[in-house]
Image (tube, rainbow, N blue to C red; front, side, top):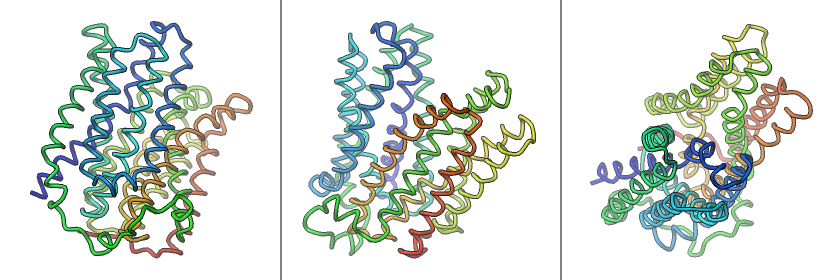
Length: 393
């Protein structure tokens, strides 16, 4: 029964990734029909991100009241409804309206699922589950592409993903008994505080500020790389746009493949060691950008950055119960998720300003500063909480 529940959670992680890349792939076909500038996708992205931050911060209260299974079912249902709402929207303000449940659904399920897996399953499953997110994020644009080329309709793409999310909601509802009895709850989890921790209480826990900044930096680095790497290669390295675009996609493939491989490495190495390994690989990738070794070295560097990113996110999440206790892990993972989304929102646009007003050539130095801060804060976390985020299960 535990394996059956794990299969449902794997499907849920694929579901998490499916909608994440839809707006980017569909927007070039959408914005003219709504009579708005192409830049207005940023408004929708901001609304979704704001909802995700808020629901991440509320995940502890929701999960205590409803349980991880019900939170997952409700969140996926909200996402399904929001995607269907996108597909029938006839104006831009309707997209903005449906973006609210879109974001609220994403944050709660992300935090609830990550905490459940961190508590009940080995580190390899956390890596493989986040690999499944990458699979979903890769499938989403293909479905949208099929809808656009085969039917000339971006709304059909949203509708197909909506139906898939709805089907998953039914599966999760049917699996709810497994969430209660499928995995043994730890003693510390059962001894969780009777009332949810406030944001101030969570931040006051030793080490939480360090892990928040670590998470902020990681997601800032990943999102900035994904958004600006292609522009840097074209504008500064002189790489052909088609070549840069194809190698920029390899950054995400590197993350997905890296997480699949990382699942096996977790059987031998602790979470802390894997995070350090990932940070080291990112540093090598950035060195390939900075050294005058030609365009192919820069392209290889981009793949290395993707591989280096692979273990960091899942290993930080998986080590949270070991660092802070299972009784606090849901609340802290919710705050970590919120920090991640803030990093996603703030840091790529900040580099856009730097590229516009100074030079795009500062791209690797910008990432290097973020990496250095991430390394420092992660080492600070380990000094305060110990390196006991390791091989469990």
